Length: 296
Image (cartoon, rainbow, N blue to C red; front, side):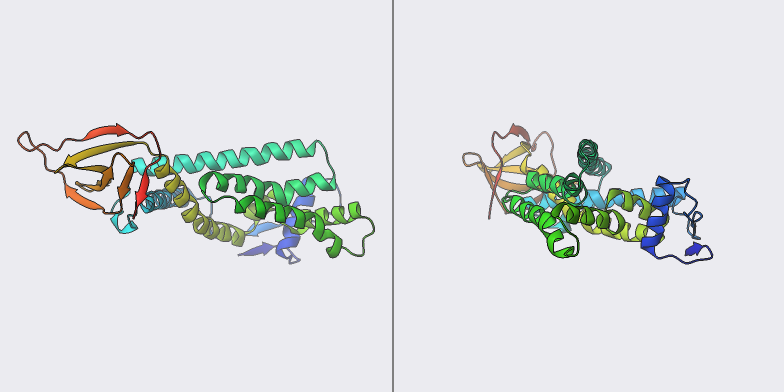
């Protein structure tokens, strides 16, 4: 993989030249378009289908893993991932991604109405972190540390230019210098799009990073799904009530249930479903008013 041009450019130069060519195409000093010389077709239909399938199964596995962990069940019980779990996991994750992107895009549109170094610094480095922080606050119970971290990052964004650009006179000019650096060298949505479009190594890095981030994020979604679950099936045996947690092949996973305290114990049992008219297994659908509490 390489770039077919007389001169060789670094990754940063490629992104910079691409952006300048896009924003100011009429200027003569902009060099000719640098064409990517890659033998691998990243947009091949079979490759895209394979990646989408892999992402779907991986998301469903992570979702189920997170959901099971809430009940104290390890991932060894995930013997299969059905299409329903895949659809649920992908739908929830896609909805969250769309919401996060919509919030960022709307924030970017609003901030662009008031262009200044301060609003640009709020847009580029801080607004994505703020949206992600809000998302994590929704998923995590102990979220008090997230606002503290966001506040520290916000202070650092506006204080760091003082020491980073000592040669520049005036605080506003220092902020402007910081903005120019971020637009040229930093991680912005525009730079990210150019890197994904024109740099093959950036695509590989993105896929690997996406997989690494996907597992904990979707697991958190699975945990939150279990926390908000209110509808269960209950069965009774020898004066002991059990909640049905999930299916396991032809069996069901159950846990002892205390209806008065609204708790289950981490004493998971797997029973075979054998039912007939003489010895029926009676399952009763119940709705819990409060969150189910898990006891060790």
